[in-house]
View 1 (cartoon, rainbow over the protein chains, first blue to last red):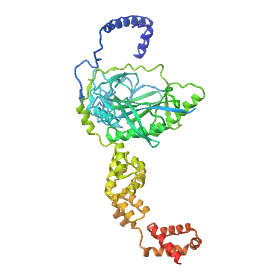
View 2 (cartoon, rainbow over the protein chains, first blue to last red):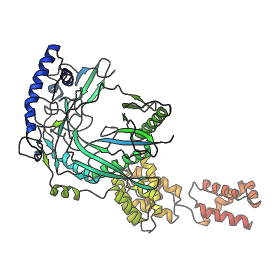
View 3 (tube, each protein chain N blue to C red):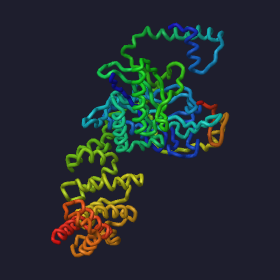
View 4 (tube, rainbow over the protein chains, first blue to last red):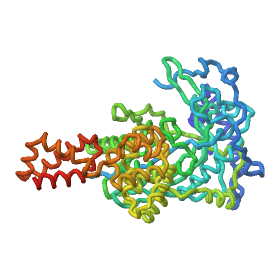
Length: 95
Length: 477
């Protein structure tokens, strides 16, 4: 699979990462190599192999519907870059 | 050209669990902002979600009631996107292995039964709430992580009314199951609609619009009506319909384009590594199936069959489970084989009282025994229909039985001819013209005189007896 600059730009945008032109070029070639390496897997016949959903051989880990301890608003907001009253605040998201 | 609308509905439902989907925070509505949050639902690094057992059971229960296949294998996936109401920057949802799929819901439309397919019902978590102020947006994460069931219909709904019936039917079933409050005002049920139109009789689907921000089932119906008309006008004017998301503005009665994001959404779903997969064994499915009560449509058919109810009466009575139970105990207590009279009271006077108080029938605090007793008083003509309604209001307000109220308020109907004679004598004396009119062949004049007697007796005269007596009196005069 060919990884061009456009694809890297697109993926960078999805991850909200800003990349310089030079970085784009470097990452394009690196990602190209990585995917080429992964592509080796397609040499295997996986016709009868189920896709892996979880790496551990365990199922059905559930908890009872019992209320636990929540944080206080003050505690919850302790790491917030900005807050107002009991709210987290962010730059306005609609006009 | 005549167009046919094609509608698909997505319903998001808060499951009525005590705690959130993946952590022990309370789901209580109306708590102070950010008081029901913890490191898990705030998406702190190093925390691990664990699925709420009851949420899974409720999802299975709803799937079964909607005639879905409950999948033997189910798993969760991450849906990735950035928005301030989503602290982890991904939503835990289900992509390729939902809890259940391939069901249907039956609705009544134009006197026929129509089956609307249900594609899937899957579990996911809710996002937080944003409040927009002048320069900032406030974020409250109390709702973040509450278990949601997303129920997706097939695009098999062909009119706004069908959409309305589908939603009403769905809500009724879900409330019977007790898996959700289904309260649109509190946001525990939300509905988005996809709608497109195509020339009637053709197969290919048109370009669809997604409608959001409808706050009631009526708003869904109105928004769909508006959108279908808008699209038809577009096509008739030779314009192209653009795929977009539109917000319904209930006050203005129209929808506006929501600012569309550049490019198509790319959610990059992948299996959620923090949760295990789930194998649903048939034992659990059977156990849950056994806990499902008689559902509204079954009850509706049984009411028609067992109690001889009309389609209209049966449909109205089964809508809410507790009310249906109350109605049934009234019908059983009522000795007459023909249940029409007691049902008329339930769907008439009692329903008006409930509507006036913004509550359900069963919340009026009336005992089945007392309602039947009241109806019996009317049947024996011991009180008039009108007085009975007054008694009913008193029963609700004072919690006393009908006999006590009738006695207290002296509401017994006067059927005793002797007691009525005086009123009749007066009415005739005071209304000579009416007497003359009646004798001249005007039947209406008789009813006027009956009205006068009713007035003089303060509504207690038995109108039939009064009419007989006046008639006899005038014809013998």
